[in-house]
Image 1 (tube, rainbow, N blue to C red):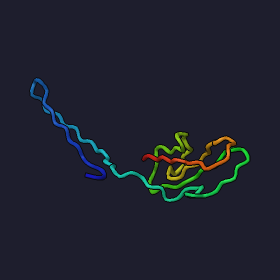
Image 2: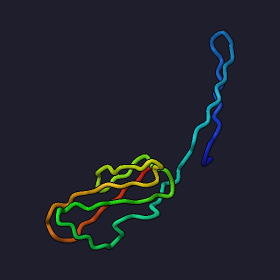
Image 3: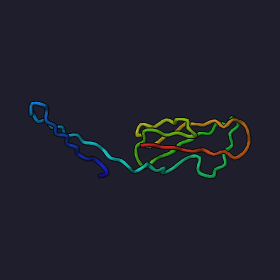
Image 4: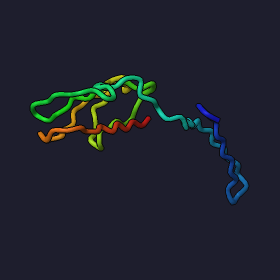
Length: 102
């Protein structure tokens, strides 16, 4: 079941002594969603150095955020992330693929 779940493990050793262990485990099968991202989808960005600043906000705490495979910094609350990616100086349309994980 989604959320916190109790798991109980019962065992009996070779001498017949019972033992139990109760643990809480979290099931989170829902992926996080981007709430906002800068630059926005379809934005035109002019960068004389070829470096593009990226920032965003997710709907839940994150453990990882990347842009085209480059790790981005997670902020203290871990819902916000930021960083930059370099495309070099070649002109033309570029794609930024953001990946987030909770």
